[in-house]
Image 1: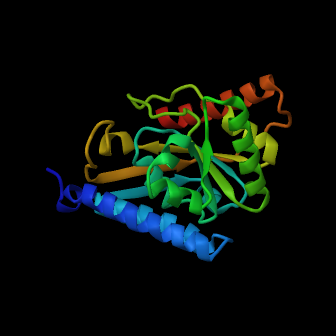
Image 2 (image 1 turned 60 degrees about the vertical axis):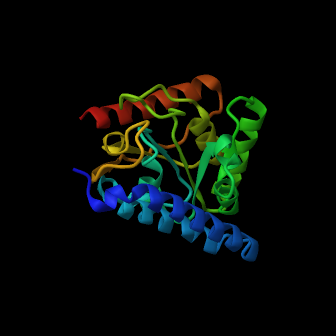
Image 3 (image 1 turned 60 degrees about the horizontal axis):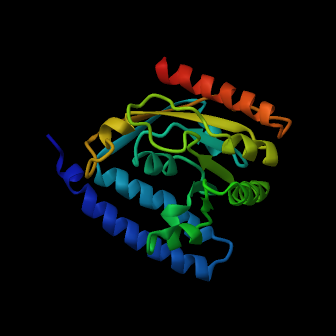
Length: 236
């Protein structure tokens, strides 16, 4: 039976998103260094988790969550993955997200205000420019978060990876920190209007050094290495 807080998730989601996005837009105008705006993201995430009665348990190499200049990669099962990870990752952490999200009124403007980077997956040159922009942010001490599967997994199994995260790691020289989420797909299934109460588990794997070459074969081998590590952890 859903808890009261879980039942209230949708109104909490709508109100918190609109208010926090508007606050981010204002903060972005007043502070070009984004110090205020960036603090809004974890606050928004924790509001949503509390509204949905969702708890997060973290294990593994937890110290890696606090490192700067890293490429965090995570499996993608649910919209719930975003607030879960945003509640854990460093404040100076940016997302590479599909450009369609930036078209949503207020929300998209809020994403731009905190420095999130749109990716046009239908345009190779535009996608490459997004990777270079993200590499520039990592050089300034930020980290970046990517779902390398590109979309949510309908059945929870780990889908093949796209190579964008490997390109970013090679371009920036940043280590890749794999994150394995369990339970988000059950607590907020695809097509459901809101969450179920429960606990999400996040396992932080050891970081992997970036590929030394941007050659397609090297990037593909590196992607397979990361996929294998995450698959083993997810199945273990």
